[in-house]
Image (cartoon, rainbow, N blue to C red; front, side, top):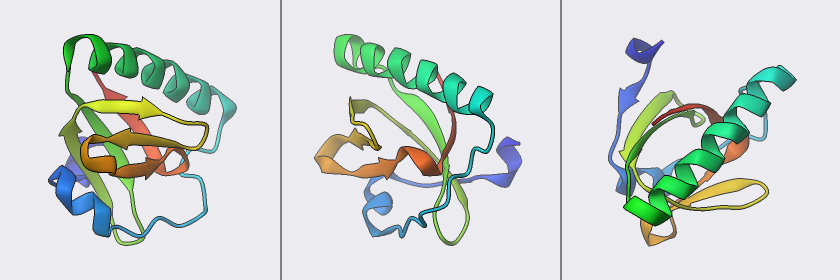
Length: 94
C-alpha cells in the first residue's frame, strides 16, 4: 500500500483540497483509525513523536511524517494549524 503514496512536506498540505467523501468504508477500519489517532495524539503531546499519516486529497494519495498536535471531531491538527480531515485519512504508522 505504501508505494501508492507520495511523500509530501507538512507545509504542502495547506494547499490541498479535500473532497467530502470518506476514504475508509467499513466501521472496523474507522474504529482502527480512531484508536491510532488516540495513541498518536498522546505520543505527540507527551514525546513530540512523529507519525506517518496516509491520506488522500482531490488529486492523489499522499503520506506525511509529522507530529499530531490535536484531534477534533472531524480533523487532525498539525503544527502551524495545518488540518487534515479525518474522512480523508487511510491510516497512521506510529
